[in-house]
Amino acid sequence: MSKVIAISNQKGGVGKTTTAVNLAASFAALEKTTLLIDMDPQGNASQGLGFNEAQDEDIHELLDLAANPDQLSYENIKNSILNTKLEYLKVITAAPDLAALEIELVQAMSREFRLKRIIDILKPYFEFIIIDAPPSLNLLTINTLTASNSVLIPVQCEYYALQGLAELFNTIRLVQKNLNSNLKIEGALLTMYDNRLTLSRQVVEEVRNCISEKVFNTLIPRNVKLGEAPSHGKPVILYDVQSTGSQAYMKLAEEIGNKDENNG
Image (tube, rainbow, N blue to C red):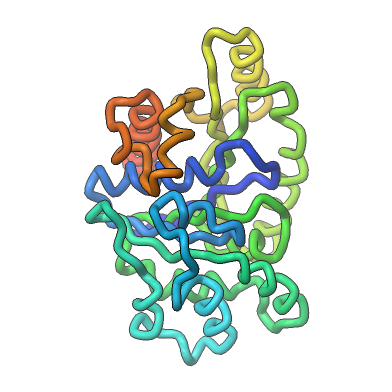
């Protein structure tokens, strides 16, 4: 059974795209068939896997196609699904022109369900589908949450960590009420953790107190290799498998997998 996880936080710089790329790569390393969908017009997740140029067919074309569900089939989606350097990981890329779709969607019928239509076709082919949402609460994000089983929220270990989370939780509740009643919170993931800093330890405690059962045990450390890997077009597991960042994302993939097995 396929699981669709949105990686979302409207606040930039919290490790959202880093998490999307490296969690997807870690599932692939565990030999789980995995698809990463880049829904962020900045295209950073695509670049982090080595796709620096706009592709002939990307998520924008698919979302346009999804305006007419009768036109959608695996046959006319498959050309957008690209191979990566990991055997079990595929990607659908994004480019800056995706931002224009946000304006086009405003007047569109069933505008919140475009991505869901695509993902419903792709589910039989993948065990995990990871979606990198844009760092804003717009129609692209609403599409992402409507199409997902759960949402993973990266939270940076810094002073303003909890700022903006209330707004995101409110959006999630609205989606649950009106568009996707099955949407769950996968958990909050604490990123850029530095155990030498009192502040980092305080933030961990504060977040766990606020959203206790929804916080992952795995902490993502502040790690140089995690920062360097995207410029080489690789997930950190291919850039430096021994790094603390690589090992942390493997632990996260295992934690999610174990939780699913226990719940299943």
